[in-house]
Image (tube, protein in one colour):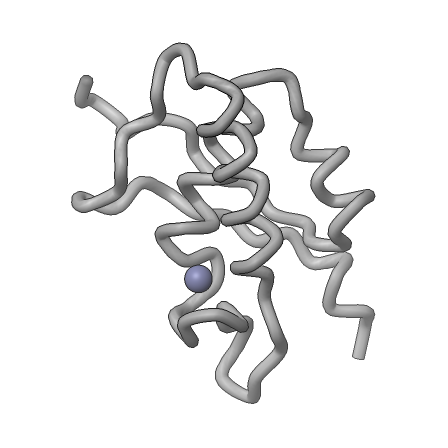
Length: 97
Ligand SMILES: [Zn+2]
């Protein structure tokens, strides 16, 4: 039984994921940071779930916030160090624009 936080979760791009703004303003960046903090995972028997909405972690909100932050100077490592979640989220849909 290792420590759960050391496991890296990978997430792709769902068909209904929100686009990432190219040049988010300050309020969008704050909103993204709040989304990531509010939608952290909790351990359940069936796997990690979002504490906010109960969906499989990382939920749509977390994915969006993570993408906005990491596209704007925050590294996945910083998110891991500050929030204790090790996760990688693909930044853009494959083969689509
Ligand atoms: Zn959520």
